[in-house]
Length: 167
Ligand SMILES: Cc1cc2nc3c(=O)[nH]c(=O)nc-3n(C[C@H](O)[C@H](O)[C@H](O)COP(=O)(O)O)c2cc1C
Image (cartoon, rainbow, N blue to C red; front, side):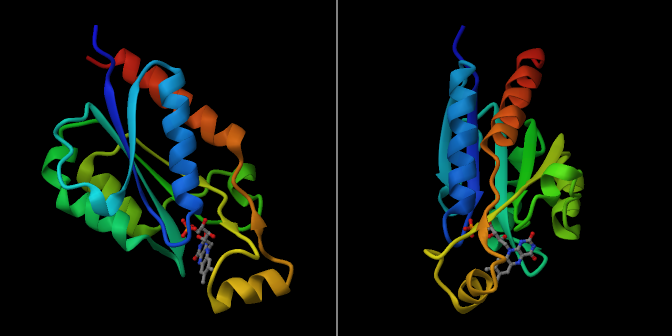
């Protein structure tokens, strides 16, 4: 049997969300799936994939525009596939302590696409992150890498397990 093809697409500004997407892709491949990881801007057609994971960074309470546009551009095809959305954001451990619900625009996309699930993962801002706000966060000691590989991997393995039960 040919393995299921899964697209992991991400909308990032500074790379943290891309890192999460890569980890998800690696975990899906460990489970025997054929996972492809792509920037959301590069996704024009999802019909080659059996399932799609789409993630975006959060900035000022908004989901990545690149992820949103990808969802909108491909909505007709996404509606007919299992879709999982994720957000990368909180610069603290809140995403590990409780389920952080999707921001309104993501909740709307979930509804529109019939997405199966949404997960929020901690984000990352470090001294290497460009931008004034990033510098302010670093100087005030509020920056850091709050991505938790175990949580990310565990969500990806859960997706693989769910996809294995679907036709
Ligand atoms: C200017 C700025 C605004 C941010 N706003 C939010 C926010 O509203 N909610 C949130 O959870 N995280 C927020 N973050 C944290 C980012 O979402 C987090 O660093 C994310 O992982 C960045 O992803 P990227 O590197 O893929 O762009 C903000 C970070 C910066 C620098």
